[in-house]
Image 1 (cartoon, rainbow, N blue to C red):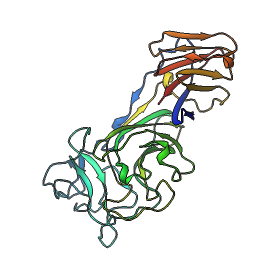
Image 2 (image 1 turned 45 degrees about the vertical axis):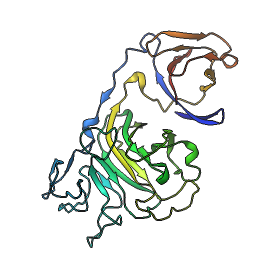
Image 3 (image 1 turned 90 degrees about the vertical axis):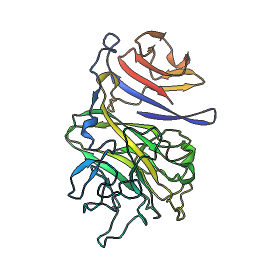
Length: 327
């Protein structure tokens, strides 16, 4: 469950993950499982060769132009990044560049990338309201998953660039930068990055719950709508462009997993480093080392707990457990 609060005039996201457990086994539950290997070409080190086979990116390979591999100059008819789909495509049936030019590809013009190459998508096109760079993963075990990437967005071309996992998203900037261009139906958090330049990749993360039989669609969403809700002006590169690298996927163990079926009756709020829990009579607070730092035995709604910034575990008298992250 994600809750947003206004603290000292600033929007702060408090992400509360409700868990099942007891004080005795809270810190010895199922461990997290790394599923990053299921993301095809997660760090953009592979590209199609002339035969549409994935190979390691190297200078002067098929599709190479001006220090980058580019889908528009590749001889492979897919004209896509290996493992990924750009929903607009890069070439139309007539062989014309959909994006207005060939400023899309894999190169080394990044800070904080993983490996040798990262991905960028630019051009001169005015984007539609929603466009995606994505891939779909099927047959995942049911559970709660953490999806991460490194995303670069410049403030002067910021529209709605965000990491997504199904309908759970994280926008690159602060909430105040997305007044009238949020997408209905998404569950949004905000990373709060300044976005000085697109080449500075910043860590992004979303959490999503996968039920049995569900697919996971993940990637980057963007669009051509400004914060004020108006269509952007044409520019080169276009408003909404981005750089991205190093996608990761983790299935959270029981002690970190979200249980969406629990009700919102328990409300957790932090203001001025004071924790207050309502909807319960008694609760305990632990740090991530399992050390109890506070215990409220009665009248919880009338009592606040002074805490340093960080991550804590809250366990109610009735056995509900929450991991509280204040960003």
